[in-house]
Length: 521
Image (tube, rainbow, N blue to C red; front, side):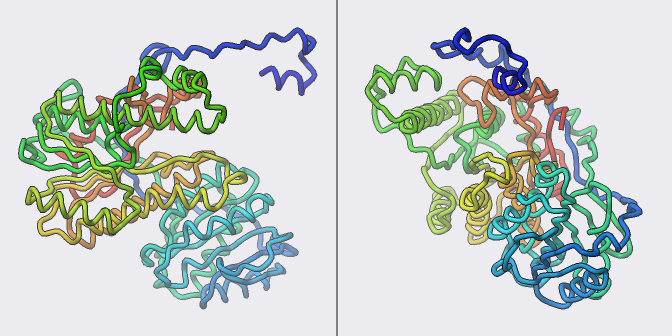
């Protein structure tokens, strides 16, 4: 606020008179000033008809310079139509796009070529390179029948549309079985469309878009344990008892630990936690033990003579993460569960297969698996480096593929597989292009696995959860207050965990994607 006032020439106080506090601001305890959590609303994604807007006349393309990437008859037909309207068209591929200097738009058609290779994360670099020049158009087309090629594009384009309001950003999902000239006509029509729908489906003469529709679980859910219950009725309905084995990948910290506690209380089952966080290898330094939050811990580390702020921050984060894992294990055992922790990077497909196979071999069963691995490195697209995008995307996506691949090799199947996604995938979210894309890809991967294996696989796109002491997840107390300022409610952790139990108990097994979030999104 002070900087804004200075820039605007409003502040009259001399710089020397401005008092800068030298002590750290005390963060109010979670549950105090932080925004309280509420029970989440259940919503299902549905394709609904969307009328085509009048659109710009074709003459609007005259004189525009457009880069069209992709090979095949559809790309050739699009190029021909654009040139017939007076546009200058450059051609290339995502891998070899040529120069993008001076282009007014990108039409990315590589997803229609029929190749199995996913466009993301590799295509992000080109899309960013064009977007930062603030062109008139950035459009991509994807074949809904082409497998993994378009995984994550919906989340990326939803976010790009939020960050580049002056650019027409759109992903067009088409039926690749239709004739090339018809598909080209649909793509050019969407280029000229003037509505602000970032993801459009075209097929069979219809135009549709996604909408989240509130959907109750029905009378069975309301007649179960209820919001204040312990989940025992749900656990019985799922088929979980003390002998059941549930794997939680990325589940020793954050919001997943709440679901682990709900499982422990409701079923007392065997819980196998898998995560990347190393466990503390001995008693903690007494000088650090009394520091219970990040601020005091960083101060304690600084007093030990560590000079680098980056090293201090990294050490503090590692210590807090290790403490959280220990706390989760302790809480689960106190709740009656049999629990173990395994350190693993799930991006290592071979190590993941070995661990899951070993757990299955020991017990002769795996009854359920919850996959919640992921990292965030939030930045606007203009500031996001391709290697950072790939790191966030691959941690979520490559890990999921490794876990599902490991399950394919087992005899017997889990009663359920749950993939933890994010509401950022369904709406887009400024600064989270990589995270939105990764969670959108997660949903597509899970749906294909369910269809191919016949097993139940559900992606749950969560809204932000309220932080709780010791298990803040990705929402700090400060961020919680910022959400409150913006009118975004947070999910109460206990309500969120029980919602998932209810979903598994009473939800339609054929549903592969559901959204649980509070108000404001």
